Length: 614
Ligand code: M6R
Image 1 (cartoon, rainbow, N blue to C red):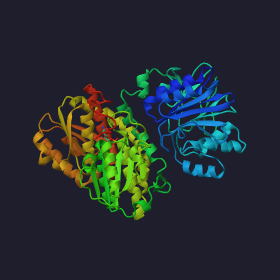
Image 2: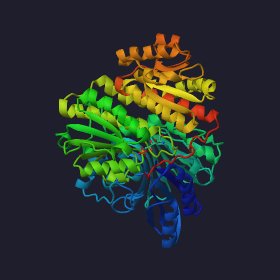
Image 3: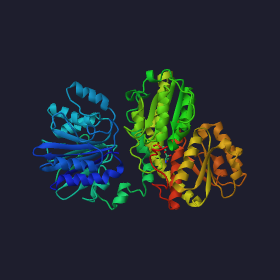
Image 4: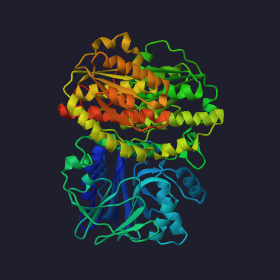
């Protein structure tokens, strides 16, 4: 996720910006840059690489008299691969303005076209650059900077935290927020802005939080906040009492928990620019996924490892149910050493958070050699798998720091939901029902509430079970991959032996394990009709052997309430969204069990975040 630091005041501007950027490094980034005033002009120094590389570059260029206001940025690429040109800050045409941005401008494509037609010259492939040209365009029309800034914001759709400085108006920094965080640090005769508290902690603990749709104007001596219509907003300062370690984790004790709680936001970002409720439309064409590319596809292979493989298994149900195209899902390490039947009518989909997993990459190269069309679902822009694919659909989950994957998984599932609905529209001319799209748009807010509520329930249950040695996870149909994912989460972070199984397979072996101190986690959703009934029978089989049951089941299931030892109710939803609703409590369950066992939750033993060797 991009990081922003900004400063206006009498201190040496570069040390403040660099210190702020170092404090934001934990968020993950691929390039870094700063902008400041120097002898009546604006100077930008930026580089692909680390903050350390930026420091070296600054040192080699030795700016003569750097002054505030200044802005710094660490970039996590979303539009345009990591490079010096795409690093922030960005100039307008005349190098009078400079901008840094965190978020995604959903309508950047249309805006860029429009601005180019009016003669604006772009130097990067980013969505961000449209912001500064748009402000410039309004200034060209005779507006002053402040009004131009407000006017530009009204044209932007999407998520943004923006900092903008001007050569002509060095007495203030313009700041705006919509869906991406901004915090303002208050000092004596100086003020700061940042995307996150850790960047401010070396300088001040007194902060103001901006809300969505608000603008702040920072000068040395004051901070003014407005809504988009220019009305003043009053905001009281807050004193931060966190230390640096907890500030990096946003006040959460672990990155894993922070990332579980970030899932609603990750979903919101992944939906941006892809779903239009008014037109009841889902669109991937701007990302290169067009009808011609898919037209003669007769079979789909989905290849991935670990959690990403489980997202692939979910996709099999979604795609086969809706599109009637056969789907094979393979573990990449198996796929690459068998003889898959692939030809030019095969669509190969690689799923990878990192985009660097060695086996998945090898599978992709094999499929490419055999003539398949290559699509990938990745979280890291410009990663090897993304670069080697014909089409990439990015999950906009932001960097995942904890080794155990959570928000990447839910956004992978979300991409598969959108992919299925998009193909339904392309090939069957079926626009999705308005209610389903509305539910899709509301997912982030519904899940935010659900995560909080279910967390406290799951915490109590974990206290009861954290000493067990084994745990069986059962699910059927679209919840079978979620049983696998729940078991993977538990084993990798709590080191409890856990197995995920298709509930109907239980009698073919695992039933022999059932005894009084061997809990079975059962997933069942009323939305699945007969499958729910079948899972209930499997639960009876466990119970009649005195096996304890921890049920994650539809909230209106009286049967499971009676049968289970512990019951967690899951809200009713559309079939497609079940995996997302059911995986969240399982992630929290694994997390709480691991914490109670004293495990290193964010860095489980023997595991690496990105497995780049076979
Ligand atoms: O980066 P990828 O999605 O390709 O990584 C695949 C697996 O290594 C990864 O999902 C792993 O299983 C995680 N530790 C699961 O939490």
